[in-house]
Image (tube, rainbow, N blue to C red):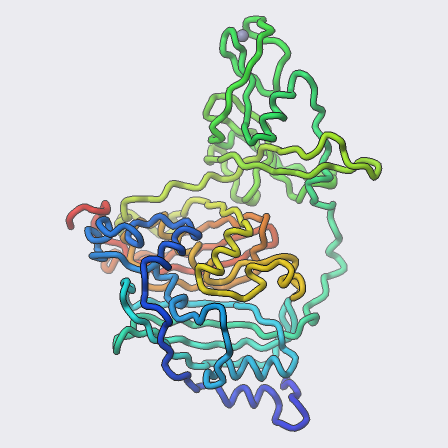
Length: 483
Ligand SMILES: [Zn+2]
């Protein structure tokens, strides 16, 4: 259906469509590709690939010197804080027309980056944008609106270095699909509503430790036997002298259960309950968070994280014992692979390790600013709430960086990126965890080209899904080694 525009003009869709196929004038980035911005980006993305920041390692690599992270391709030409929509840019003109027709909300939907080569510090990037497509009006979960697709071409001098396909949804706020009546509200997941632990003389040390974010394991001062839960007296030697040691927080999943009923307030269902084997040699029962039931595998590595709950209120009064902290476990982030995987060491079906990414306001706001995205809803909670969002939410460039880090940490520092394509779904809000999963779908042993599909899931659903196309070396390369 065609949307009716203002009474004076043609239907809005027709007026926007007239812009399709037009290109913007060339835009030159404000700054050359530079190591300071690369370092800020690597800090916030937590990407330790040395080819981005370490000159001597980068020189000895296949890149021959420091290169910019490929996912930064469309960061360099961002205008920074004082964004104005240039009417000579057909995308801006299209967005202005849609704004005027009431489609005032904007979300990024797809981004597809293709890299002809890596960028190096000192290079000046030029870009031009072509408006590729404006969809008919669609009913989406967020609201009725139009998908607007643009393609950016990036060049250094006359050399094309990459392209970015970028699609946004412009929609009318408040026209999203109503929640289905079958979707019954579950228990209130506010952790402040959880049952309080009974703290007594025997377990006081444990809860005191938890408040200090120390996981304390009871240990007999006489014979060294460890206990969980704590005992008043050593079962082995009979001693009453009981102390504790602080656990490293590393462990593995020994067993698990997924209780469904009864559902009580304070928990988000399904609740994953794990019997965690600590590397110190004792086991404890805890929640496994940051992943889904289908991610659980007996023996999977886990790491400690803390749930700092708030004081519960009982009978309208705040619990006088104050806030408590609970030890929980999430999948352990796998170590970065410092050798670059060979194509013949990789096969379709190979799985990348689970990687939980805690979503903090620092990551979301810092990621937006490190990618020169000053849209207020990425760093200012008040403004985000005025725009109808429950909190600040992650920008697409931070998501792209995290996807690049996830795949690169598995593939190794000299895997050569050819393309990174993502589709966005549920927003990433602070306090949640995005868990990355991925697998290899294709490897060409002749060219070394490999395709990896990945997904980042948070408490609301899929935040991102996408594909990475990389070229892997024919022989295993340890960074710094001569080829
Ligand atoms: Zn003992």
